[in-house]
Length: 109
Image (tube, rainbow, N blue to C red):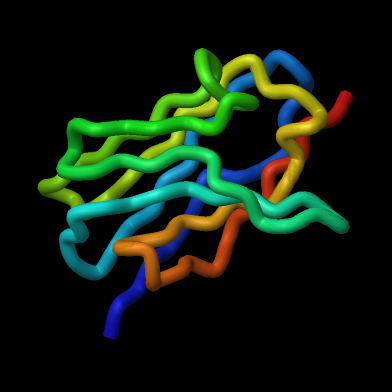
């Protein structure tokens, strides 16, 4: 059974940083981070394929970095210069079909 377990969320002040982790039960070629804010649709934040090719939503370019450790089957999302509008539940997704349970990120002073 496929398992994706996110961690690293929390409360941070504007301008701060957080690093999210997504530990997978096996290796996947394509991984992604999504987020869903209250009252809004889930949106794509970043993707990584084959550990090399990355893509980002315009709203996070230059602030967020997606990376992976293949030895640990883990994908990371380094989030810097956080803004209140980044507040959301962040989800990991694998191969376009498997979802994690989500981790809450709250950016507030």
